[in-house]
Length: 254
Image 1 (cartoon, rainbow, N blue to C red):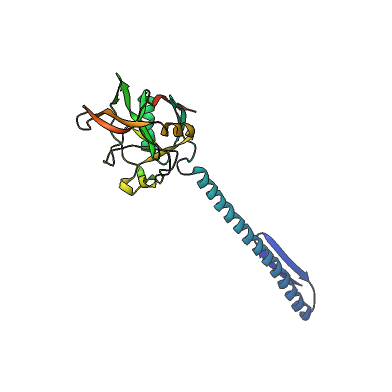
Image 2: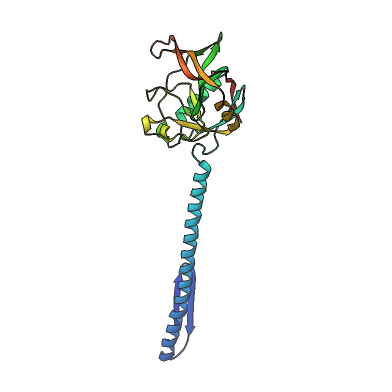
């Protein structure tokens, strides 16, 4: 009695026969041939499944990256800016810019932005606001909390529709002011001049942003605060809208 056994995983193949030595030799060859073919098929199948699994993983990663996009990611909190020109909804990216988002939300929840204006508008660049409010007909810079660390190295780019923190030449001087890019501005990305930290993007109301970018501007006197003393200093500033573009309210929305 002879037996030929081939094991592959949990699959067992066998040949059982009673024969002469010459027949046993032939049967052995048949067993090896059959077993080899089955083994080859199983190996091909396993290789195929591994390839499929690999492509599935790559596809999944690509899909995830595509969904996250530049300033998006897993859907974050949204803030609605109600302006006298219309509403703008911004989705915040706390995963990439946790400090900037927390800072922005702090000002939103405190009502800081209510009644402020877009005081700097450049049609082929950006619209900037969040710092000045109307007081007896004059644009006066509001008091702010301490500045935050610049998160410009977070990988988010200053592309059209993104919102970023405004600052002075000091890299870590951003407080309440922000700007919305009306076109791609790669010159604002890190490492150029230290970069400007993007922390979200406009998801509704980009037509309102474009409406604001088109307003007439000129030179006006703004009352800015001295960073060292907090005192007000009157100085002329260009690119100020002729008619005030007011943020009537800023609120977190679901």
